[in-house]
Image (cartoon, rainbow, N blue to C red):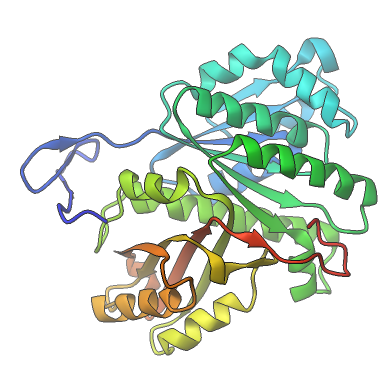
Length: 339
């Protein structure tokens, strides 16, 4: 977080620091890859996002037509004829390579690119690594936001494991959400409801990270802070939780850490980006206490950068988003975790 807190003029397109120097807002892009990725973009569009544009990429023209994005790009139509990949990641990869120019043109000039996809299918698994590599080739920060299939889907789980390994090598930071964890927390949900919950969480976290940079905050986080954490984050852990301002900060953080959406050892995280959002009754003392409580759960040498923002509709409540990077995965679970 910068000591030179930026402030905004009445013209929201212009941002200045305390010396009156104009700051340029980063260009942030959210790219939905394949059916699941486009669903995540749809969720993001429905909840609204301030400061980012969206792109939908798909090999299935019918599904792409239903996407709610600023821009829609059919991928590899000369390979798939617009009919999808039938779950074949190799076909998705081939389609993306054929459409590489269109993908690069859509990414051009972006500073931070979220690559959203579901792992295990053909299109998302095949094209997300190519999108990520194209982003990095042009100097952008590529952050993968992906979901894993349910363990009962054996073929998709095997494809997802390979896809994750490839994507981890292509992104600056990779955040994985395991649908099996959602199902374990809410076992009565149908598979469709599980996917919907995960899509919503991914959309909310993308929105949260983006708006910490693009909207004025009580304690500002700027793009340089995000870049510091995300540039070489590797395999990472995302945490999102809500509570009440009368909750003890220690208990609030511990409760949030008990319900992770990825099985990983967060205590070994090297870096952490934390943003606290509350109503007009949120105090700096309380926000700092939340930051301190989370910091104590991490490696003693972890670099924690935090900020806080006010949203009037959150009066009496608090929302925290944390991205903990450079993690080591835990041992595989008997349930069939992708590890």
